Image (tube, rainbow, N blue to C red; front, side, top):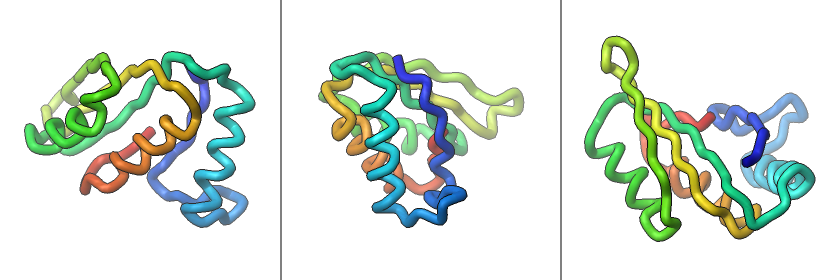
Length: 108
């Protein structure tokens, strides 16, 4: 499982990378610390919504995912953890890019 922790909220890091450059750098980091194929864990937070949950699940449906959910104390937000057996860093990044298209989802 990967130990990379990158905040995707503002796809600019301290180096001022744009979105495309960010993913290039992220791919390099993934390849440096992970021997693929390997289990990979995604973590997302979103305003509680069955529709949003369904969209996230749909993205991962063909990757044999394992899901874990946790509602915030006031149930305003839900966190979802998705574990897949990733074949390579490109697959990991493609899933992040797909999920980034869902409004309100914060990627951790």
